[in-house]
Each structure stands twice: as C-alpha cells, then as structure tokens.
Amino acid sequence: MSKNYDEIKQKLRGSICPVITPFKANGEVDFEKQAELINWQLENGTHAISVTGTSGEPSSLTTEERVQVMENAMKAIDGRVPFAPGTGSVNHDETMYLTKKAEEMGVDAAMVIVPYYNKPNQEALYNHFKTVADSVDIPIIIYNIPGRTAQNMEVSTMARLVKDCPNIVGAKESNKDFEHVNRVMLNCGRDFLLYSGIELLCYPMLAIGGAGSISATANVEPKRVAEMHDAWEAGDVKKAQDLHYELMNLNDVLFKDTNPAPVKAALGMMGKIEPVLRMPMGLPSKELQAEIRETLKEYDIDAPNQM
Image (cartoon, rainbow, N blue to C red; front, side):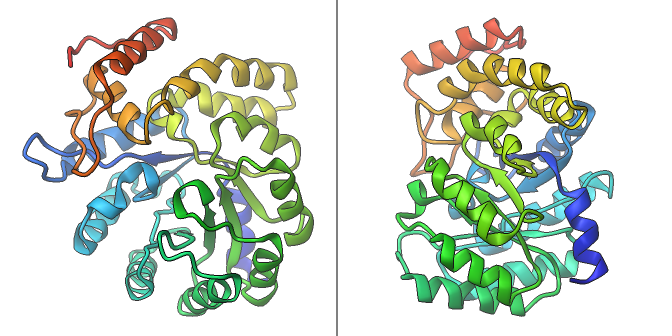
C-alpha cells in the first residue's frame, strides 16, 4: 500500500458530516449557504466533510451541479479537514466522470455508492467498482446502503475488491445487519476504514474497530456527534456511551420520513437554510414537523423559524 493510502487511513476518521445540499426558494443550489454550513460544521468539531451523498440529494442534481457542489465545498473546507464527496451514480459513465473530477480537484477520497435501481449482481458490482477504482489514484470508499439501492454488496465481493484494488480503503455501511458489518471488518482487514451510516450503530461501530460515522444527524447536532467520537478516541467509554443514548431521540425523529426531508425541516427551523427539497422529494407532514420542533427543544437547539 502506498504512503498516501496509509496517510488517509490515519486522517479520515471520526464524524464525517454528509452535508445537505441547500437550495434557494426558487430551487437553485445555494452555494453561499453551503459554505456557511461547512464552516458551522468545522466550528463544532466535525472531523471531515462529505457532500452529494444521500443527504445531499445527488439524484436531484445535474451532473454539472454535482461538480459545482464539490468544488464549492472544496473551496469552503480549504484544507482544514479531509474531504470525501460522493461520486457514485446509477450510471457507470457518470460515476467514472464524477470520480475523475473529484481526483482532479484534489479530494482526499471519493465515496462511491452501490448503484441503485439497477440491482446489479455481485460480479457486475465487482466489475463496476474495480473499473472505477482502477481509473483513479485517490482512495475509494464503498457506500453500501441496501435500503436505498435494493442490492447489498456481499462481504465476499467487498473483500475481493479490497484485495484487488489497493485504493479501496473503506466502506460506509448503511446496513442494519450488524453481523454483516462485523464480517466486513474480519474479511477486509482490521485496518479497513469502516464507517456507520446507521445512526443507532455509530457507537457500536467504534466498538468493533470502525473508523467513525457518516451520520445525517451531524447536519443538525454536529457538536455532540463529534464529541462521541472524541470521547471514544480519548478512552472515555462512559461519555461515548452517554452521548450515544443522548442522541437516540434525535436520531429517531430525523428518520421518521425519508432522509434528508426531516433534516432539512430541522435546519429550516434553525434558520440555517431555506427548507427546500427538489421534487420528487418534499418536506415532512405538519405533524412530523411539530415533533421535530419539540425534539429540537429537548436538545436546547434554537429553532426560531416557523415553517
């Protein structure tokens, strides 16, 4: 393994916030708000930034908008923390294009989702990811989210990719099957960067040797999510456990509708963004919005804006 990949395995750890894509009321990407959100994240201890993952509504963006969102994030981060944008797509050529664009920008890693809707078989998944990984020199993080893609990358497929592609350094597992996650760690190597994409598994992932989490909740409460990882790294297991349970109610309410709708509603209430999603997505029901507001109060999160 090259020195660069060893370095990223030391750097890309902790709370990686998958920052939402803010839109203006007219539906245009709000690049100024995006930069403000990133600065707010870093002020509150977030360890790394991702964009255009699930929380960033990538399928509602044009390919060039995705490039622009990555470029704007890169500029806002300005080298302060690692940057690992999502470059995957349902379309292979688009994935290749976006991943190469990310490499040209100088990102620290690219996160590539298992293609959604198409449901490729395991051999097809292997060929897709190997082709993408072989086309660039930057580290690749596999994003396995079977609840959204309708296809699970099997442990054997992931292990084969890790063996054959030195720059595949980790995986975001949004997988509720924790047995599967443990087997990923066993078969891909204990130095494999394993991130939780399931909020209630962020702490348990650390306990089995995971590198951190890529949690949508960090969009709303970055400080406590980062502190949980900091506590674990400092050896303060009780504090990490306490924060895990403290965050549970917020985690739950933010996933009572499809991500990132509740997160955007919360950020709108907090005055951070215009609460706008592009169709076919939409805001949560008024009932859920009321529940989100009450939950924010429980966490002493200021939410002055009416929806």
